[in-house]
Image (tube, rainbow, N blue to C red):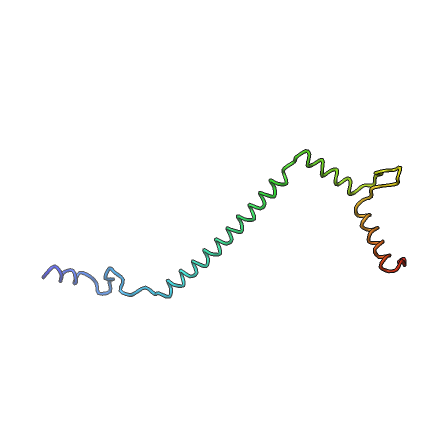
Length: 120
């Protein structure tokens, strides 16, 4: 008996030949790659948005943390000027009033002019 015949008889009939006997399914590979590409795109977009949000948050905190004494002084003076009553020139009767009250008076005056001077 030759060497080849011995190998063929030694192997059972239902044993695999040691290599693939069928082709791969192209549709499965295509859809697998397509789903992978879509998932990678979604992940990349989500990571980019996370980066942008984190960067904006860091910038916002750094800008908000700056405390220049001159800037704080200007802000305090501006807030005080816009929210308090004070005589600017008491001899001539010039006073500063809060901005909210000034807007109310202007709106009331405009309403009276438009309605012909009639009070509500």
